[in-house]
Image (tube, rainbow, N blue to C red; front, side, top):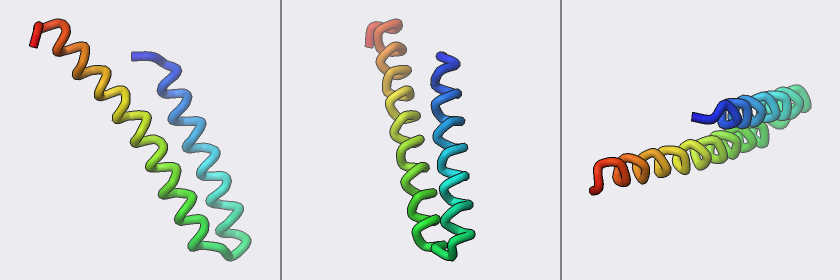
Length: 64
């Protein structure tokens, strides 16, 4: 597993948290929630790609 993946997820999380705080302080809670959901979707997409790669490696190793 690459350490770059962890840094990428942490970076996205930090950016989303800062944007969420800024929007919440400005009184735009609905937009802050949408930004948070968009960040979760982005991270889940990255994680799903890695899980897909893992399954492909397992298939290759076990000749499935």
